[in-house]
Length: 60
Length: 392
Image 1 (cartoon, rainbow over the protein chains, first blue to last red):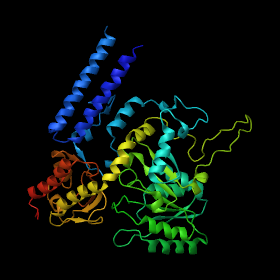
Image 2: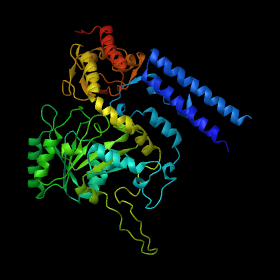
Image 3: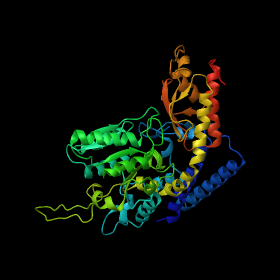
Image 4: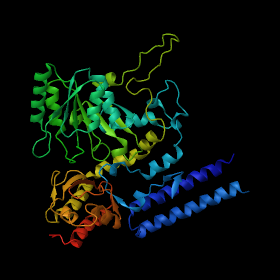
């Protein structure tokens, strides 16, 4: 059992949901202001981190 | 792009501004999206269902607390979640209406109110709207009197729409409820267009039941909703089963007859719960939503010949507009006929107006950002100018 991998999968999906919501909030042009860009960058980083955890856990 | 098999991904909300009249208040919050991912399986909220084995008693996830919070929020005594407002109408009508009973609703009532009455064996009688598309206390009293004369008995129930789906007008519920109560008629508030988007106080409105829609106005997956009752009526509408198997002798504990036992056992109730903190907070910003609605209406009214058929100034985000003497004049000669409007809007990233509609149509601006509202307003004006319509 890899609880860590499972939690990372959910965390990645959740942070992608935040990104999805940002797409909704900025539709249709998706021109992000500074604050929205900061949020997007933070979500993308978080998603990368979680993917890293999943990879480390399942590919070891 | 497909989700599975022939099921296309729905990306309308991500790619466009959606002003569909019925979809605006049901868009999920990020919290509801995340909860839907985790609780998509069928009986997903039942992992910790302990005796007495009923949805509203489950503590983990905190469904019991959610019920208590909903009741307090609406200032009602008891609440149950149901699969859509219509199931709330059905539960109350089934409890109060006997075969042949007259039941009062309004000439602006949703069809599901008629069907709830029909299923219970009742006979629907409509309160006429006035020239301003409102249901008035006087018209209510006249209708009650007429129905009593016709049926020789008092109706057991009256439905009133807080906000009607046809015009998005807000009706004088408290005054109507007072009239009904003079005849001892319980009042059911249809809050499908109010509960979850604007403040609703059951006590202040003096109603006996509040019915709300999760998927229409509480940022929740479909089908979801709620039915709330005062203490006086809760025991009756939420009565528990007395059924007993004649062969097995089985009984069924605290299952509620009108709820058919448990109601929302997975993603629907979890979605409602996840969105609830946001929903509770967003109703406090109702004035801003109404102002946004007014901005778009003002833009449309700047196009010569346009009329707003809903109350004006706007009191709600759902609006019925008449463009027979403006945008429809374009449709009469355009090669795409009435479809030009939805096409031109879509080109600008806006959807939700029924394709082909250029005469009388509805839209809902609920939940849009300031920038999106400006874009919608400017787009209508731009389209009008492109076709040579006068814009003031």
